[in-house]
Length: 508
Image (cartoon, rainbow, N blue to C red; front, top):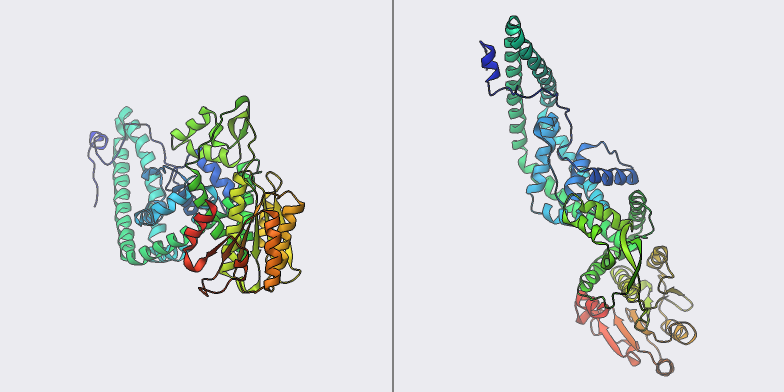
C-alpha cells in the first residue's frame, strides 16, 4: 500500500502518527518482562552463582515469570522484533499450559527454584527455538532492518513536521518523510504477519515442547526447593552467598544417586512437617529486651510484616528471610525441657540398598528435624554387619547442616547384625546424655537372632526403661517373620500401611 499526503494538517491529524508529544526513539529490548529492581538483583545473584549469562533474554524472562508474585510485561513499542514475535509467542504458550500455574506456585519468591526451573525450561525449549528460527528463515533479519529504518524515519518526521510548522517551505520534505514512515510501518506489519503465519504452522510441535519443558521444570524446581530445605546452612550473610551455597549443594546432590533419593524423600517429609506445624500455638510471650536480626516469624517487627502487603515488596521480605536479616524482638523466655530424646538404629545392609535405604534414611532425618524443632536430643546409629557401626549425635544447637549431610551420605552396604546397634543404643542411654530416650529400629529384618540373645537384650531394655519401636521394611516380603518382635513394644510394617500414613504416624 502506497501512502500519499497532500498537506501538513493531514500528517498531524493522521492516526498513523503520534506527534502530540516530543519524540523519543525507543530503546529496543529483547526482554518481554519488566522486573522490579529487587527481582533484577535476585536474578543477577542467581546468574553469578550458577555461572550463567545475565544478558540472556529468554532466561531472564523465564526467571521473572516464575519468581515474581506479580509479573509485568514490557511495552510492545519497546520490544525488539524477536522479543515481540518469538519470545512473546513462547512465553504465551507457557502461560496457557495448565502446568504453568503449579510451577509458578513452586517458584515464586524462591530464587533457587526459579533459576533452576528457568534454565531447565530454556534448555528443553532450545530445539523448539531453533525450529522457530528455521521457520522464520530470513524474515527476522529483514524485520529488524525495517524496524531500525522506521525508528529513524519516525524521528526524522517529527523534527520535519515541527520545522514545517515554523517554515512552510519545508512542507514537501515533511510530506515525503510521512509517506516513507507510513510505508515502512506497513511493511513491518506485512512481514510480522508472515512470521506469525509460520509460527501458527508449528503450533502443535511448540505445544508439545512447552509441555515437556514444564514437566522438566517442575522436577528441577522441586529438587531445588528440597535441597534448600534439607541442606541450607542458614549462615549465609547475603543473598549472593546463599545462591552460591544452593548451587554447590544442588551439584553435590545430583552427583550422588543415594543422596538424590534421600533429598527427594526428606524434602517431601519436611514439607509435610511444616504443614503439621502450622497449627502449633506458641505459649508465653516473654519479655522484649532488644532488637535483633533473624527469621523467627513469631517475633517479627510489624514493619517487616508490612513488606508482605504488596507483591512488589514481597521478594524483599523473602530475601531478608533467607539471609536471616529480618528485624525481630529478642525475648527473655523460660526454657522448657523437651520430651525425651530419640535414638534411631538404621539398617544400612546391602539388602536395603535402593528405595528402602533412601526412604529409611529420609525418615530418620525427618525424625531428627522433629526433635530439633522440639529441643530434643537425637542420635542416629548406622549399622550393617558385625563391627560396622557409626553413631551421629545431634544435640540441640550443637550440630551443623554439614553434619546432617554427612549422615545422609553414609551407607555401609554390608551384612546385617542386630546385636551391635541395640547394645550401642543402650550404651547411649546408660552412659551418655540419652537417659530418657526411646529407640526406633528401621530395618528390612533379614537377620534372625537366638532366643538367648533376645532374652538378654529384652532384660537390658527393661533395665534402661526405654521403649523400642520396630519399623519393618517388608514391602517385598509381606508377613515375614521379624526377629526383633521379641523385645519391640510395637512393630510397624510397611506392607500393612501406606508410607505416607506411616510417616505421619511416626513424625506427628
